[in-house]
Amino acid sequence: MLLLAAVTSSGLLADNSGYYHGQDIVADNSDWMATLSGDRRLSTLSLVGTHNSLSFYGGDIVQTQSMSLSNQLASGIRVVDIRVRHFYDKFAIHHGFVFQNAYFGPDVMAPITAFLVANPTETVVMRLREEYTAQGNTRSFNQTFQDYKNRNGAFIRNPYSINPTLNEIRGKIVILQNFGGSRHGINYAYLDRQDSYSVSSNWDLYSKWQKVKAHVEKAEHGRRDVIYMNFLNASGGSFPYFVASGKSSPQISAPRLLTGLTTPGWKNSYPDFPREGCFIGICSIAFDGINNLLSNYIANGHTDFTGIIMADFPGVDLIKNVILLNNSD
Image 1: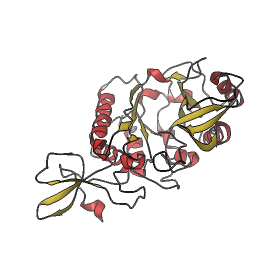
Image 2: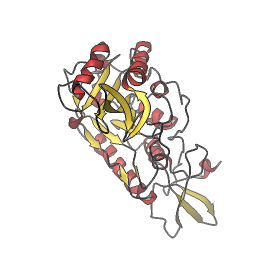
Image 3: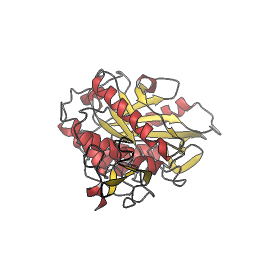
């Protein structure tokens, strides 16, 4: 298998299962938080989230996820990124101008509350922000959210603390409030974030990885009363699936694209990217996705804490490796 032949310039195995572009549950991690001490504060947890969690439609330039929200949660995702258009006093799920054929009540709140009923030891952190142009409303965005909150009040945690303990939020949704008006959760502006989301071409991928890695290092060595959020995604001059995987097409079995550089001539270029197809001392330097790079970075023991990681198309090993960090304290 090609995977077994791919190594980085340091000789470490370059795994390829941090990325997943399928619909099934990648692993049963429905209740992984059950073993954690309830005294742990949110800021001390390493969590995997999904960026633009319901962006399934609009083609490769728009799609960021392939698993349903229910399957994301069952696979171990505990942070979701919900973008809503305020549309006739309801929240319609959007990615930019693209409607995702979903609404906040039946397609977000319903699966999350069902998951929490079945798994009361867990919590779901929800970043909520307004997307695209509001239309046809008779009330403010905040008032519409209050209406949803009134109907789901037992599941939405009151915003008493900006850094609650796990015991305080088990079985609850924690809102990361990325909108104005009355307070309903933790102010999104309080988070220490890396969200460099634009790349001009595929060759910007390594620069994006360096930003992700630098923020992981910042979180590891920073204060544990700060909530860190690190976005692995980017797009613009590259498709979201490529940034996540480094692959030539979205399929899990697709090969990695090559950078056009070879060793030994460019042996110091892109040191964390895998070397493939080696013959008589000459290797091709391939791209690798941010999901795989971070999964390998954790697996190779380079960090024991990430804070919140937000990913497109997260795969089994990325989720597993981040979850396992919570047992290293």
